[in-house]
Every structure is written in C-alpha cells, then in structure tokens.
Image (cartoon, rainbow, N blue to C red; front, side, top):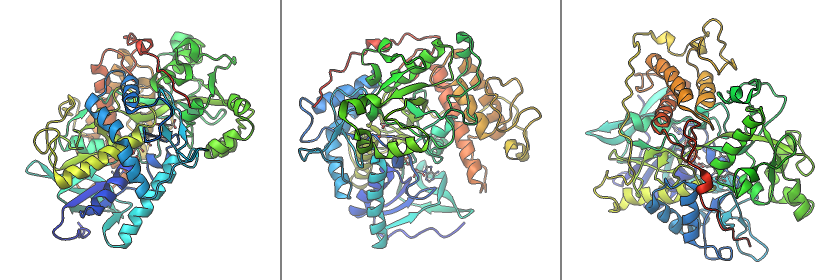
Length: 598
Ligand code: FAD
Ligand code: SIN
C-alpha cells in the first residue's frame, strides 16, 4: 500500500471518483467552497461519456423559445419517462437548470449563439420546444468538458485540488457502515485513500452490450462498487438504446445480434447491424432539424409507428426500427437516416455549419450526407437505472454520494428525455456537494430515506459450483473451450457452454437483453450469467487483484446479472424495457407533445 495523497488539513475531505461532467463540476464547486478534494479518474481526464456528448443540454432559461416554460420541460421529461419518473426530482432538475447552466458558464463553458444574440436552441425528440443548448455545433460534451478540465487544472496548479488520473477505483472502504475511503489501482499497485465522504461519478455501462455509443471506460464500475458496499439500486431494467448509431456496412462482424426475432421474420442472422469499430452516434438534433428515417426500400416508416414519427421518444424510435426490420425479414440489418432533406430545406452548407464534427466523421466513414443516405441502427446508450439517491445525492449508505449517470435520482424514469443527462450530472452533482458541505433536510436524516423505491441490495449468491481454481476465472484471456473462439459471433446459442469473457458477455446481452426482450430470452441470459457468476464471483473483489481489466470484467458481469434479474422481474413492457411477451405498454397512449417551434 502506498502513502495516500495529501488532503489539506482541517477542512472537509471529499473524494470524487470520475471526471465526466458530474465529477468535474462537483469537484470545482467543492473546492471553491473550501473543501479539500481528491479527484480520481481511471483514464485521462477527458475519457468519459461526457466528452462525446453531441446534442447538448436541455434547459429553459431567461429567453426561452416562444411559449416554452419550465412546466413544459417538466411535462416532456415525465412523458418521455413513461410515467416512471420521480416527479419531485424532475421538478428540481428543470427548475434548477438555469442555476447550473450559469455555473457552467462561470467555469468557462460557452454555448452557441443565435442571430438575435441569445442562445441558439436546438430541438430533439420528445421535447415540445427547442430548448437544447449546444456548443461547437455538435461538440457540446467536448467543449464543456474542456472548460471544466481547464478550471480543474488551474486549481491543481494553485494546490487546491489533487488530481489522480490513471487511478481505477476498485472498492469502497467502509467503517461502522459508513464509507470513509476508496481502494484504487494506479501504476500497477494498490492504494488506499481516506476521506470524510465519497462522491461516485463513474458514469454508465454501455460496454455491457456488444453495440454501444459509449467509450471503453463505461464499464459499470461505480454501480458494482456501490452494490458491493450494500447500496440500494433501482430501475436497472431500463437501458436506453439510441436509434441512430452509424452502421458501417461491409465491416468485419464482431458484435452480438438480437435474438429471437430472426426466426419470427424468417431471416437468417448473418449481420449485426454493421455496428463495429469506433462508434459514431448521429445526434438526435439532426432529426430535430428535419432528417427522417427510411428503410432499404426508401420508405419513411416511423409515421406508421408513432404520431410524432422521428421525434417520438427515443425508446419508441429504437424499438420501431427493430420491429420494422424484423417485419422486413432483416432483424439485424439497419435503416437509413436521410439528412439530405435538411440541406434541401435550409440551403447548402447548413449541415456542415450546424454539425461540423458529424459532417467530418461521416465523410471519414465514406458518406457525404448532403447526398447519401446514412445507414444507422440502435446501440446501447444510457442506463436510466443506477445507485439510488435522494434529492441531495445521498445513497442509502452513509458517506456515499452518487451523481450523474451512475445514480438513479428518478429523473430519467423508464426512458430518458434527450439532453437531460448532462443536466442531471450538473444539478445533482451540485446538490451532493451542498449536502456534503452544509447538510440538508430534503429527505429525512443524513444518510438515508431515498425517495425512490429501491431494490434491496441484491442477493448475489449463486447456487452453482463454487470450487473452481483461479486460473479458470478468465479462461478467454488464455484459451477458449474447444469449439468456442473468444471472438465468435455465435451469440445465439449457449449450447456449447461458452466460457466467460467480456466479448461473450457483451454478445449475450445484445442477443438476449437488447431492444426487444422476452421472458424466454431473459431466462436464457440469466442461466448463462449464473453459470459465469459461479466461476467468476463478481460479487466480491479478490484481495490483491492488480489486474485492471479483470476488475472491469467482474463489474460488467455483476451489472449484467442485475440488469437481467430486474428485466425478468418486470413482466410488463415499460419505456425502454420492451417485452414481446407483454408488449401492451402501448406507447401510442403517450400524448403527443405539442410542438412549439421558433
Ligand atoms: P461520464 O461522463 O461517463 O464520466 C465517468 C467518469 O468516471 C470517466 O471519467 C471514467 O473514466 C470514470 N470512471 C469510471 N470508472 C472508474 C473507476 N473505477 N475509477 C475511476 N474512475 C472511473 N447526454 C446529454 O445530456 N446530451 C447529449 O448530447 C448527449 N450525447 C451523448 C453522446 C454520446 C456519444 C454518449 C456516449 C452519451 C451522450 N449523452 C448525452 C449522455 C451523457 O453524455 C452521459 O450520460 C453523461 O456525460 C454522464 O456523465 P457522468 O459525469 O455521469 O459520467
Ligand atoms: C444526441 O445528441 O442524440 C444524444 C443526446 C442525448 O443522449 O441526450
């Protein structure tokens, strides 16, 4: 064990884990309020989901679009969340948005300006008015993160904050039931850091699935750490799939395929949507500007699935794509985004001006979207569920706060409204810091009384054989079982008793717990996950394990198991959780957003 980095003496000591929007912003606020902060992050400071955010941040400010109000933002959030949001948390989110947008600006973030000198406001799906602030056109996340990182580095230079990059948190330390520190790996060695409280801001878990918009760091670490420390989690069945991730045709197929739908459609499973290599999300803001979705026959199909067509809530659009492809007999194929109509309506050069990064990256992938249709398919994007917190960021474990994507505040319900995630990280990251420094009484006694109905800390024990040798824990790192190669695309069957590997897990989850689910598929997934659990024991952290990838693999397995268990428990369809055996949630019942356009 190494010496821990020095906190400043006699001031509240906060450990922040994660350098996305939630961790960076919370760290800055805590430092500027006089706390001593150590910020740990497992990669470089800019390695985060935040960095890749495109569309922007939703907020109703002083000069909203005509007719837009905070009440409308609240209503849109509740409606997109399929009636599963925590109304009080949504009210806080939408009301306090302006406060934290101003906070961001104080730390040097700037948003794009419209012709009238006010903020340029984008429109995204399921918003009833344009209210999305963006920066650098479609580079919102990178611009915001860069500004926050500059501010953090300035405070580091002044000796006000300690930054530890390349520091991977592996376990929370508990003393008398209270979190008072963290264990982490850095430079191949294990370290311990003690503090008065810890804020988890470790982001999401897209790497649980074979096809994702998320970068490599999104491996569910925070959720796993919190669960092992006894924290309550909730809403884990709700994983959002973004409808428009670039599908690169003709590339080597590595990922999983959605199972159970090919047979129904009479098709063979020989593709996986072409979602491989570096993921490229194509922002919903593009559909907000007027792009439409068409199938391989050139038919615009979303109008047949929802009254709001391409601007229906995100879960609806992803599911409609999957159902439409299944109907066409090509369940693992892709559809096309037609952005040419935007250029026709708004004039040549509009796409390049409004979406400069996307224009370049789509060109790099071989498409000129001013002339070509762009192939797209859904990919795992955002986890609505997470570590249960109250309105002050407190988890059910004293001393442990959570904010951002890792947390479940209840604002995202069963399906997050576009561009509400960056905002959640800001508002509840700040509230967590305020609670840590100044206390708070929104929800009962310190450390407890979450407003959500949490799942109890899950019982992770497995009934299967526990007596396997350590060398068998990650066999795919060495050699796979005969007939099952580590990179196999054979996700559809576990008849060969595939051994655990991250790739196998990701294929399994895409095949059996993806956009379209059923009791049968989920049960098969659970059986495989149980078998792997009995070998890998993801519910515990082996003492002295200094293998960073092994820690992530365990976290992914634990997260997948919890997700599938929650999905099995919820037998009805709701929001992003769609079960073909209970399809009756009927999103058509969700009333149409009345669109206010400027
Ligand atoms: P992250 O930004 O993911 O940061 C998590 C941090 O924790 C990272 O620094 C990571 O390295 C670190 N970490 C993880 N595990 C450990 C560990 N064990 N030890 C130490 N550090 C660890 N949302 C919007 O609102 N608007 C958008 O326009 C938008 N666009 C998106 C586009 C893309 C391509 C993606 C992937 C997401 C998008 N989202 C968007 C979602 C949004 O970006 C994320 O939900 C949000 O940024 C999460 O912020 P965060 O601070 O919680 O986590
Ligand atoms: C996008 O730009 O489509 C992503 C927005 C989000 O995830 O909120």
